[in-house]
Image (cartoon, rainbow, N blue to C red; front, side, top):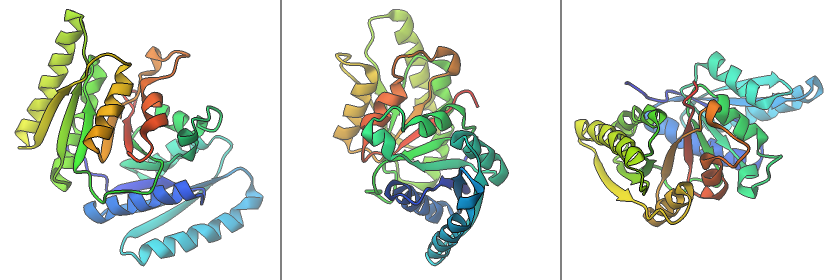
Amino acid sequence: MDINPRVILVPVDFSDVANCAVRHALRIAHIVHGRMVLLHVVGCASSSEEAQQRLQVQQHDLQQQGVCVDTMLRQADNVAQAIVRAVGEAQADVVVMGSEAIKRADAAATSHTLSALSVCPVPVVVIQTPPLSPRYDSIVFPIDHTLENRDKHGWISYFCDNYLSHFYLIKPSTDSPQLRAKVDMNMASAMRFLDERGARYTVQEVPGQKPYADEVLEAAVNIRADLIVLMTTPLQQRTQETLPEQRILAQAYHIPVMCINSDR
């Protein structure tokens, strides 16, 4: 699989956290020589003129920093759906999205981000703070028992091609022989991808004393990870309970999280 985010879609609302996402996307664009597309969604036509002016100012500032930047202004009631449509129009390879709402763990305010994660056909990198590192040198890959877990392995090629990444394959602790066999199968698949590309990696099994999502986040903090790569929970498996990706996003703070939707 040849994956390289040449087109990076960045939803912006001109907030501080959206500006953090823009800065993060700028660093990606510089490394992959990609093109940024700034998307702003308005609820009514009366807001369009001012928003367009602000988009043009932001576009000019980014172009002065040596990247190709386009803008998209769309009117819609549903922001998540507007983002999905913009992905198709811009032929985006990845979305970089700021989410102060998730940092606040405000369920009502997180709806745009979580809705976008659940339906977006390309990976979404969620940013909550300014980028601490210009690179993805330490990447946490949680490995679980699901078949969907393998969908993110193709991104190993991208990280290997563009960064000097060290991968941390985080393995859950389980007493179930059936689940352990599935985890081991997914682990072997990830290790094969990494071995084929000559990548550096470490396998780490968490204790199993807390929910797996919490232990993944603790491992990422201890590693000082630059990125966590997650699969979103498939639609048919979602319940009213908090999803694993929500638990991590709500507590990741300074660590960017790449969410890949297995239902794409």
